[in-house]
Image (cartoon, rainbow, N blue to C red; front, side):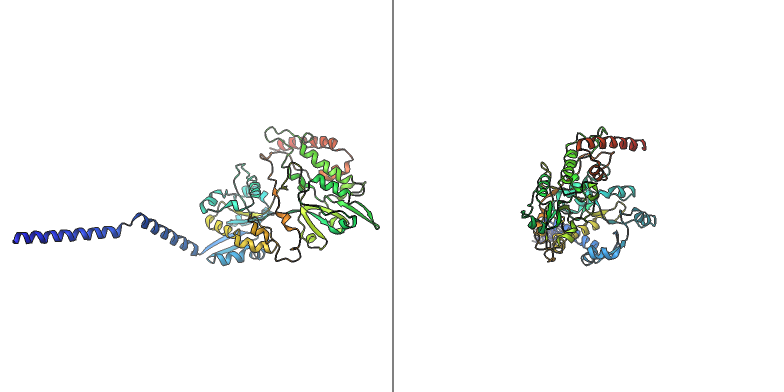
Length: 445
């Protein structure tokens, strides 16, 4: 009997030991779901610690602290209270200002870039950084931005690897400005969206002439360069370095458009018609010009008698505005705060922020139609204009393979207009001059 009692006690003790061991095992080894939950919690706590840890960011912005705070700083200060932003008045528009801060061992963490084409300055200063890595790491959604502007930005990679060195932060706009008073004087219908260059030139013929002692001009080309960029062409073959201008259809059509415009009787002076090209807006402001295609001039748009339609397009290139050399943000290679800065950029490009900026007349880089729909609501001087035309088209993105040699047309506009030569003759001359330029460029290497 005593033996049985001893065995019974032993079994009870052993059972209790197993129960205690099982309980300890269950409490120290969580289930798979619990482990995931705890891991996420730890990760979240880590992120929260990082978001509250004091950090100083050096931000290069043209004009310094006042314009930076007005555009971005106040927003970031509220959203990221732990971040101190040291604003540097430095910019790629004046590379020497960046050289100075770098020499002082105060290299910027991020720059507000005035132009997407300024990537070569970043490369030369040792600041260039391909942001694709941090974009993927932080989950930033590039598809929210106008894709043709992002594509254009990638084509500015100085290493020709289509890396994104600058995230576009704005949308450049172009418009066919027209003076309703001039159209009414001639009894001509206002221009419509989607018109081609050929159609605009033909329309200009009906709006050129004398009325009530006033000489009216149908079309002022101002700075024609933007129209040339819509073709995304170039004079030099990037593979062979051979020059092709006289046989380039884009060059022919572009210079023919200039010829057709200055040849409208009364539209340009017969002597030195090129004197009215490259006038930087001076002519349309005289109120005797019916149409002026250019980057959107808000001073004109605010006038009661001025409205806009889409910038003219080339037949076969419908839906393409000129190339969008807008601004952007560039995180630098030396920065130790790349992910944090990416989060700051993400906030500045959020629907929330962009919606408010759009209302105040800043054309947003976002493709969100709701953001575009409220554009200009807070500016009564433009809110009743045809603003939706500014968002109707995408953008030319430039040549697929940019040539190493050659140059863009610029002074040639006026030279051609004043030359008295026909298009084919002038393009042959232009081609010869470009061939000589390429030889000189190669000789300097």
